[in-house]
Length: 229
Image (tube, rainbow, N blue to C red; front, side, top):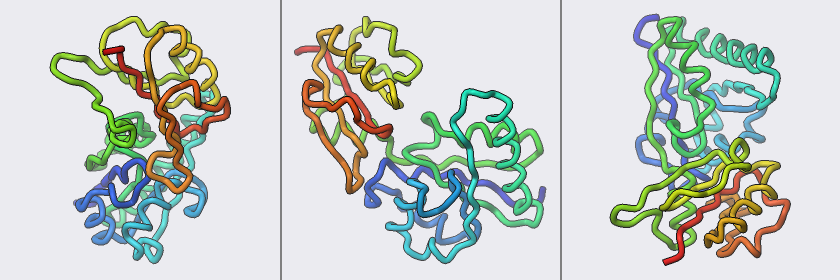
């Protein structure tokens, strides 16, 4: 597969100023830029990156549609189709930069592609970005943890029925349509919590307490819950 490689770069949570210098450099140095979604103008990752690197709009853009559906066969088919589209460029000796929200090591859809690409002998490399929960904590002006406190990062959409029984800080991500259940879980725990919706984006909303959070808070919402001090 020659020396071509897939770089998965984290573009951060939303504020283009939080995108790393390395991510910007890789975008400038490569012609083929892949992104999750069907259309660049509807891809959150692309919209963040193009603000930091305007010349991105003139690159060869490769949409990779990975629908979040319950049907396993449909998911796998989309993963294989996406990997095959990327491999076409790798076969021609062209490296591909894949844009992903936040950091590629945290709940990134790229990993579904990564397994398939590497199984076919392709080279991959991940480039770290600012995570949404670190940015949200900074926006709330709080620390995530101090001294010996543990941090629990939970995909709330899958864990909404499990009590927050451990000590330390809880980060609830990916609440999605189960935001009501996640908020109920927090209220039952007696913990204090804050929420940041669309962190770093123009539509950002910050709630210092969960009592103020609306039931229709969006998918890109991060809840940070700390023990009472």
